[in-house]
Length: 248
Length: 357
Image (tube, rainbow over all chains, first blue to last red; front, top):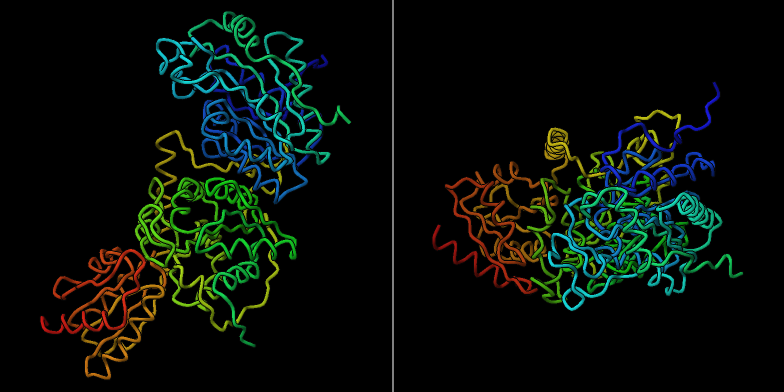
């Protein structure tokens, strides 16, 4: 019998440790499929973050680094400067990228580093057990905002695509979600575009993906998808925030 | 070979380039800014890359990336900047990514002063970042010595897969001396020699050879095995890599211990003391980690007393006391706050000790 679908060879056979309903698995698969389809051979180097996806270095079937918390764009910068022909990507969560690593991400974009960042925004710190992130929605209850996020105490959720689109040398920024099959395909296309721009020697690219965290949101996987649709997408609108390639 | 008069920071930077360093990541800070300035002009000439990072934190993590693909990477900074790098230094020590860095020490704590100091001995030697790790730490006394050490520093770093630290001070970086500069070597990444590095891998290749550069070992047994391996490496380094220099110690009653530039003041003091009939000698660690404890212990056994001189409040003193047996008087003289102990002060201290001997 002919196989109609196979697991991409850019993922190892290591069993994911992610919780049921978590979207990291989908995002890993999309990235891996894109790399496989682009036939990058030996020229792929990924950088995993600190957070739930720290163990991405065990899952992506290519040369991998684990960076210090928030520093993945700096580590990727060192890699890319030394290996300009390689496809270099960082995989970062919202605590990693939007909190402790804001300087590194903004300056990688500012220098126009030819790297691609996949930013997974689930509005919460996952690995440490559900603390407030810079992207936690107003009123959202977390272990460190037990009465709901209060703007007067913790400010208003940070919009990373909007922020990075304003940096002159950012080349391409798009926000995606995985709540429908159509959106999953859009996310895959966005990842592909970011990687292709990188290999064409264009500037810094980032794809933000709104992602479910049923465990720390205290919801079922189905409720989580609904919450993304009803709460996250209205605050974090999907779409292309910058695409210098399309402008030309 | 001809001697060239060179400023310390530029000579050390040039030596690094000739030793194969092609990637410099750093941030300006006095008194070492001439190193990044030199690299900014020099590295593009040899096909390398200089990048001024947004912070010292970013710089050390860029080094982690470039060294992780097997290249010879370097960063430099001065005391407060080195504090910022500790996260990445510990990461590289844990992930066993070799590179070379320079701490051109200035006064501390905090922002301290911009004058030369030795206040980061403990930070460099006892570990400034988290966890059980060591750096091979060299404390050059002259520009030539720094240049000579730089020439083999990468070989040591790569042989043991540990970061190497130069614990220099502002004087080394800022003064000029005639230098004999070694010839450029041709360094190329050899994946056979660096099987751990991210040198290219694809599905179908040997899974064991896929680079997974990490300092995270979530399973305690795995971490324990990893740190055991690190400790075994440190034991090897202690066995093989201790370096020190001595001056007039064979018949010395008083041995002065000092590292870096202040050892030169001590040497002058020893010459004057000898002319005045006092048998003094110098024991100068070149590696402050591994500390030359056995050699110092042996030297001290023939003397009556040991005087430790530092440009701090006595940080190496602890290692000196651990090495020297308790039958000998061990005393200390030093200043913090970037004041170099003077020849007269050192002599006065020796005379004071002489009365108690």
